[in-house]
Image 1 (cartoon, helix red, strand yellow):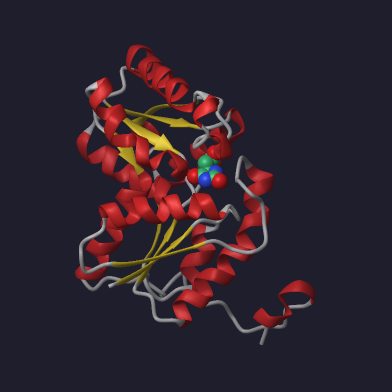
Image 2 (cartoon, rainbow, N blue to C red):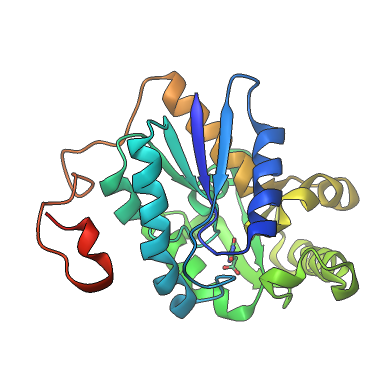
Length: 243
Ligand code: 5HY
């Protein structure tokens, strides 16, 4: 199968790391195509960035759909533009946030999320409520490391993330941890060993769920809100999207 993995921000180094994490989790028969849009924010931290990441991301997903991908993963933890993406792609579209929440709820009664900055907490809490998984999440926490500092050894990112996980265990009685950023993917295994509890990376979770849906022959239902967009006139920067 051919799996499109879209990093909605424009940082190519992060897209490459996300692609590696996806390939590490994928079956041998799964071809991973990791892309990011040319236009939009370098990282997504909160509502404003998210809004400006969506158009460029949707253009990449429409291109992938025309190129015949079997499924799409949105590799940003706030599941940027997930519903709109499901309207314009025929195959399944999996957000790494939703995927990680569901996997965590399968192996723990209560889990906590550790994301980057505090401003990212509210969008994530909103998604948990939308997915009906808020009652299984003890708390959404932030380790106060900006997205683009995660791969900078000088930022102390891993130590700050590890300390926040320790607080989640002690204060939330978390039985599992969900890493709240695609840029944390490669840290999951070592943090799970260090803290002796399941630590879930959304990129791997989404890849496995996409593979499962395609293997079962399931695609997004077009009978309701995810039906294909109605043809209409678009003006300005998005005129090419219109009828
Ligand atoms: C992410 N931002 O996974 C989110 C994390 C966050 O650019 N990739 C980003 O802080 O919301």
